[in-house]
Image 1 (cartoon, one colour):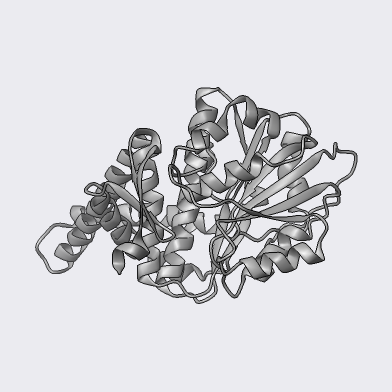
Image 2 (spheres, one colour; image 1 turned 60 degrees about the horizontal axis):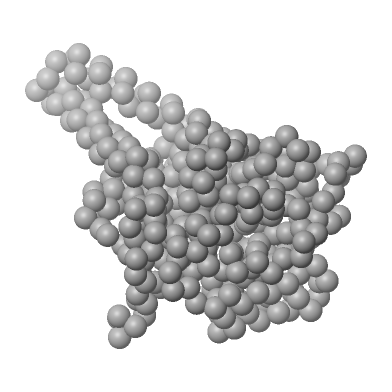
Length: 364
């Protein structure tokens, strides 16, 4: 279910101790199945640490059960962050407790499921010494093929296409040598910033550390039944994070979506005006060629997603995604905060956290 690729057993490769660190917040009906895939990897020398804020998290009971059943699984309670994103805070505190024998770190979101041979394959470029950092992305698998779910899957495929051109850690999972993580003082930066992957990407870029992107080792994130509200919240984070950490990426994203939305509307108006007799055929031809080009590109992105989404639904959903993303982009211009897992983060340059507010308290 989780991958279309068959992974071979690890042979004749270095097998250093690998530590998977997976932050959790909440639980779903798929959590047991997803987390189980991280526990049953065929790599012979690894450990998994699940990171929770405290024992009131709904995932605490499930993780405690895993700890009782597996010797290579641990639970870490990080406490509450006051100067950084909760995820960053948990990762830093957890890394500080690791044994000296750990040579390779794998940061993995708890909503991502992996094939049995995934850990050995994704870490191979780092274990072999060819790279210090390796990253991959994830496919969203909407179980209900409604419009919001397909939109999220399509957006993720679009982002990965951009990452293939300019490699950055972004979603999915990232592998990094522990010595590199320490040498670059990643923990020091994370303890003051809102998001992990984009911030890490900036650190690696400044240090001229090359990142190996591994598209054949995608992870899979099932979406049970996405809603329009959930889609907009997802897009909010995707677009707002770089506003603070990578303004250039954010400006490009905003201009791109506004331009694309305007172009689609104008080309559609040109086609419509031709058919009702207002404009000549040259306008219809321009509009038709533009739509053909865009939809051809959209169709090619379908190969990046592991879900079996019918091509017709994939194509029809695209204009909806453009409208939704453009709306979020325009809205992001006027926002000075990010809402994430019940907390509101006010950030400054570089994604440095200035203030954190509890949304649950504010709503009472």
